[in-house]
Image (cartoon, rainbow, N blue to C red; front, top):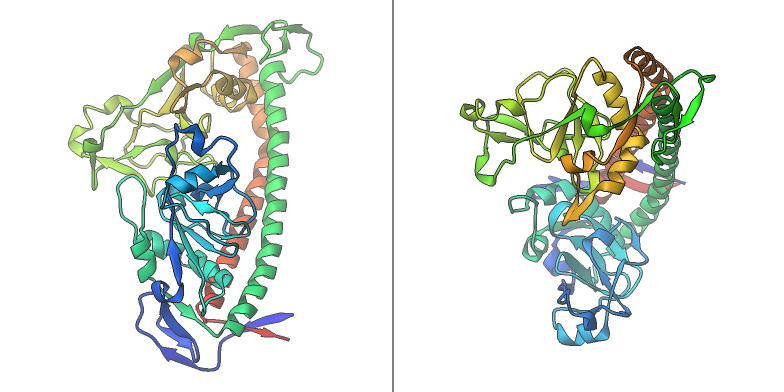
Length: 443
């Protein structure tokens, strides 16, 4: 068993990220701590000789998992290795750090031999560092590393940036002790997180089944059903109608803003990245347009109760209902705003649950087009159908769904809070041990 406590003696150090280290620890530049620092490249994508029946592991940043990397998605051929001098096969135990895009700072320890693309920095052959200890240090300092990044749309760092970083280096015996402790603790924490995430999945599935049944069959278990003749909708009550989506629902795209529209401050623009899985708008990382252009974009203003959906990319179909708008918000083109075309026939509340249901989501996935990335537009909506109940039943269905799913939402929210808290504990544990704030002592 191990306990954490401060070290007996500390010495001051001049470095941005730590002000003191335990006596016996040193600060090493990454460039001096590793004898092998390199990267890779991407063979010409259209050349089948470089990829077809490839046997050489070719690691991309999407493979990095902040742990032991036992396999990768892509392979290249020996021919690719011969033709590209920038491709080097790195040995097992090599530490990889992502340098580009959304994965900046992501890490992994190679448990396989392989080469990398240009977005990975490979660190190996250190005489002073346990590579696993260095990996934990990179994890602890990810935010600091991202702050050093450059570029517009996505953050990027370079090998030179990584080489200049200074890492606290305790004696190898201490590093090994810290690594063993963190391996045990993080494995237990990760198992806890996986169990909670699985619980959330099960709760979400049960919630979706409740919504689906209510949206397609109502809440009267004894109602007479008929075949809707639509595979997505299935059987519906005899007195309901099967209707085309775009006959009853209006989709409003926002403005297709250009790079020159955005300013350092002004009116916030909601993009698909602001639509969170918790059903809220995340406004802390919005882009801005100049306030004097509000009249031009007035039609794109978001209001309380609006139903927003991501219309493109990996989050396509993600939906939220806007609540308590405190400021003027504009809508980006890739965010869809949905309204009933006729409020006497369709309530906004029923529309929200309809869009949240697998009835529509499954049709969206089927209809989405591939134009570089998946997306959906007004033309696709014309191919979709749903079951339309009388307006009074829509009110009853909404009331039923909100009552029946309330306890699922509470249980999901509780599990999410527990996950966030244990992640914060894990991050603090890693940071405090690899920077020398707390000592791992065997009891």
